Amino acid sequence: MKFRRFFGLSDVPGSKKDRNRRANALHGQTIRYVGEMKDGVENIVGRGGNASVRNGELLIFSSNDVIYRTPVEEVEISDLLSGDGVVLRGPDSVSGSPFRSITIYFVDYHK
Image 1 (cartoon, rainbow, N blue to C red):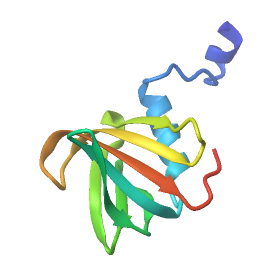
Image 2 (cartoon, rainbow, N blue to C red):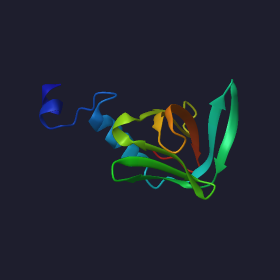
Image 3 (cartoon, rainbow, N blue to C red):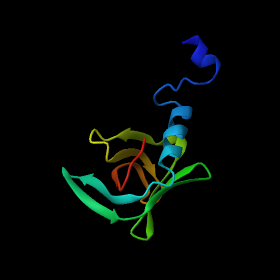
């Protein structure tokens, strides 16, 4: 374990390094659709688009608009068990919400 830590290979889940790595892995991924859970019902908020990391922010483009924008250091990224996409949780400057959770389904998601 000390060997991995010495060479910077260790990513503690939830650490700044882990969040940057996971966000950069999403960069350039093509989105099939984006869903948001409200009152126990998942609503589709966008179709098509892509994910991008710019100036330390994770941006989700869908339906010809930015629908989610958050700093990379503050977003929590979880993979879906099906392997089709991810769940993003964190503050959103587009909607002004201090906490927003969206599910992104990708066309071809490669971890």
